[in-house]
Length: 81
Image 1: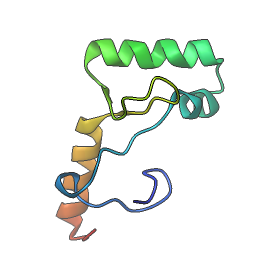
Image 2: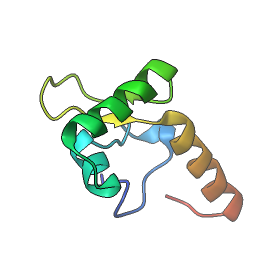
Image 3: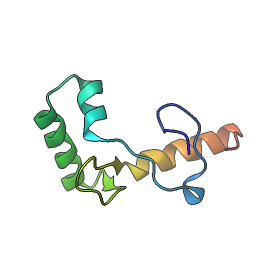
């Protein structure tokens, strides 16, 4: 499956959750690893993210509401995955 950030994704029902790691947040926001981890932790507590992997290292999370909204938008545009 292509990475969410670099290529098209199949509809949510046809794929495993695509996600991101704390390192990506750190790189994109240009913050320290602890600051990126705190941001992810806050989103997890608020219910904005769900774990997409069970690994203790290199964990990955997904914002399913965002993925669903993007899939719905793509469907309205008539795109097919």
